[in-house]
Amino acid sequence: MVLAGLGVGGLAFGLSVLGLDYLPWPVIAALIGGGAAASAAYVAHARRTPDPLLDLSLLSVPTFRASIVGGFLFRLGVGALPFLLPLLLQIGFNLTPFQSGLITFCSALGALAMKTAVTTILKLFGFRTVLSVNALVSSAFLAACAAFTPGTPFTVMMAILLVGGFFRSLEFTSVNSIAYADIEPQRVGRATALASVAQQLALSTGVALGALAVDVTLRLRGETTITAHDFAPAFLIVAAISALSAPIFWRLPDNAGAELADRAPAPTEPSDQRVG
Image (cartoon, rainbow, N blue to C red; front, side, top):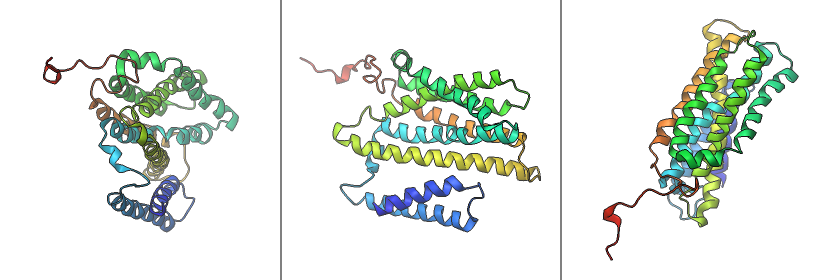
């Protein structure tokens, strides 16, 4: 518990403030370095104990591993959106917090609309196709934010965020569901704990990545004041990282999560059939 707490806490907090100039660099380095060292020590401990707090042996399950690894990459990119978008609207476009909130709220509306369609979509196309294709579609809508300018009509921005929110929520729901497709009931609790840790680390890393991308762009321009132009590369970078999850999901079996999606399982091979 001590090693896992120090590891996850150090990495999550250290990555969250990385590039934000909230803490001195030595403190941030100590947090990330200490968290990494504690995490490494925990991995060594978990391999020796029969009942670890975070059961890493669950990663041997293909569907769970794809959910953790692919979901980490997807959340890493998408996790930067709630950080970058309000800053772009308020600092880059000089909008009020109220105006910024009205625009960004469209993502939540898109997510709500998705809840009524997710079952039908998964039943029609299956988890592998939905996760792979939708990761690319969601990343494209994330990258579209790089094209926002002070002259972009509010309706255009709201439409992109609305539709993008739909596809991002579809990906989140599918990733969270496929994680438990092949987990035995007695191990669901352990799987939930490990998945929750991975999610928090991904979101923290996404914020750090977005902040670093903006900071590096600003420094390369030799400026000290952030403008709207400094956000476009950040959106493109995090979108590209989210898209990297697609090949991971595509490696899943075609019938992965068939029972969860209420689809027919793959036909049994002749060699596997019993002879009466």
